[in-house]
Every structure is written in C-alpha cells, then in structure tokens.
Image: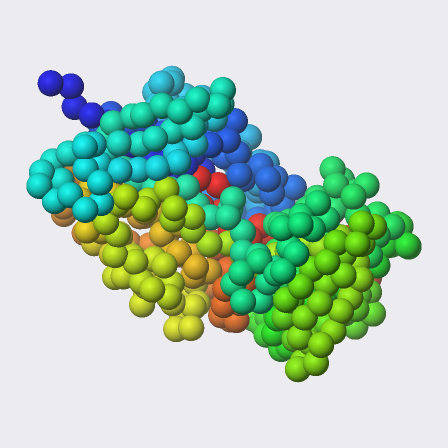
Length: 458
C-alpha cells in the first residue's frame, strides 16, 4: 500500500521550510501554492527592504538542501528586499531537483476535510485520510488525499478592512477601485496611481509608515501630491518607537523619519479617526467616521489601508479546531502571543504541542498560526515547521525540543494591537526608531523598508 503524502498549503518561506524538514526525514510531500510561483505573496512586497539580515531569514534545513547543490548563501549581515528573498533563496529552493513534483503552483486549496467524514462524523475519523479540494488554474477543481496537512498559507491575502469595527466600512467594497491594501510601490510601478493625488493612509504600524514615507518622496517630485495620515489611536510617541535604544539601525531609522516628516508638516493627521463610511463619488472617496468624538469626513482620491491581516478560516470549516475566541490561534498558543501581554521579543519558543488541534495530524503554522496576533517572527515559523515535521515522523523527542536563538532585541514596544506586527529583529514589521534628520529621508533607498508580514504561504 502506497503511503499518502503530507500536504502543505502555502509556498512561502515557512511552507517551504516544512517541505525541507519532511524531505530531510524521507517523507512524501505535496505543496499547494495559490500563486504562480513559490513566494508569490512575498513578491507583492518585493520592493520592500527587510530590517532583519539574511542570517535570520533562512531555515536551516532549506540551507542544507541548497548548499548540497553548490549554492552560496547571501552575506549573513545584508538586509534583503522581498524580491531578493525570492530570487536568491526561495526560487533556487523551489527549483531544486528534489522539489520537482512536490510544488503544485496555481493550485488554491478551497477546502479541507476527511474522506467520507464531515465534521460531525466520529467513527474511524482519525484513520481517514484528509481530502483537499483544490481550485486549479484552468478553473476546474480536483481532489487530493493526504495522511496529514500543514496549513502555512499565511494571512497576506486576507487584509483587515478599513472599518473600525472589524467589518468593512459601509461602502468599502463599492469603493474598492480606489482602495489599496498593503504596501504600494508608490515610487515605481504604482507611481502613476498616486502622483498628483490626495492620498489617505490608514494605519499606525510600519507598513503605514513605509507608505507615508514613499508618498512624501513622491510629493517632493510631484508637488500636487498631498497626504493624509489616519490613525485609530492618538499616541504618536508610541508609533515612533524607542529611538537610539533600538538594536537594529535599519529599523531604528523608520520612526524617526516619520517623526521628522510630521514635524515638517509633510502630511495632515487625523487621530484618533475611526472610519465608518466610504462613499465613492466617482472622482474621489469621501471617508467619514469618528474623529476624537466628533463626526468628520475627508475627501481623498486614493486610500491605502495598512491595518494588518487575519486568518482565512473558511477552508477549514469541516475540520475540528480548538481556536482561542479572541486571538484565533490555537488555544494553547494564545496566551504566549497575546499582544496585550507580549511583544515579539517576549514570545517564547513553541512547537507541535502548542499548535496541536483536536483534528489529528492537522497543524496551522507560520503567520496564520498566530491568528490575529501581530507578534509573529519568521524564525518562529521555521522552528514551528521543524517541530511539526518531527512529530509527524514520530520523533517526539525532537518535536518537544523547541528552541529559538535570537540576538538581543533592543527596545520592543507592543502598541499596534490588531493593526500591525510589533517588533523584533526577526519580525518583518517592527516599531523602534532612532533619530535621523528629515532632510536625510532623500538619502534613504527609495521605497518602503520593511514589510507587514512574512509567513508561510506569503
């Protein structure tokens, strides 16, 4: 009897790490990636430069596979962009001979169940193979069987809405042609969209700051461009971060740059502003809501929403999950990552035991495993992949031996709640800047510097 493979959902860094660890143990693996290539979501923020160096952005098992073919690792202390992470690491990994036949691109998993078992059926459930319903590029659907499933699909494709209630603002869907979620490339590929326009950026984390700084550079070249920064909170000092105490210079610049931009009146600020309505007037959006207790509306031509992301749990409805009702992570993991209690730097190492679900041999890893918590670290995702792979192969000693070796984190301020990831050297969106003159903004490399999230499937 042929042993069924372990199925992995998501071909981002953490999903590929899970593949590498399972292959290293002699397992059959199949990976489904919704995009055209491994790391497709990473390419969405390819213009963004990370502030954690290469040494913290690569998984050990992946590196072993690559080095066996003569691949040379990038300099450990360099800071890659998202595009470089794909071109110099993820793509060479996906193109290895050992990966051929493993990665199914343009294959989106739309549902996971147990063969001949809906959610209600108990008898023989643990022995039934998983059934994955997969939408293919030609519009057809197919089904695959697996002995175990690892969901590393991330959250990048499921951004939080602009509405302040956790729901899309009234009219948000109708105004979608003028709304951009994530980090636009406002200085290059999307320059025409924003130049000469009045643009609102919603968010208080580093994705928002990156977008704002790019827009200030665009406004220097295109003076008709104007900027509105909308924040749900009002404490800008917390947004600016920890100043010179930050352990990473590249991270440390960011808050100070936006501080100087604000001091130079480079943008209008609405805070605290909680959006309730977005009305599309054809040539502009009228964005309305509560501004510090009073009704306020602002007219802009474009809206950039940098309010974080959340897990898409709909494909998992036929599985038995035990999720924390607030964080939407596994119940055991929630107290370790709750942003009201932790910053990235205080999240402890964890693995299979904390990720285990009532559905035997099903795991969520990577950014999606954190639910709505913003404290995820890429290095944490790699350790999750290693531990879960060990457990699925019956090596319980290795599965329990979870470790996370990180450098000193410097100041870490947890202040972005559901909007953004907070901070850590291995986190992909952080919060602790150091002083820099506003005039130095022009000297920085163009484009945003740090992405919002980087996780499996992204």
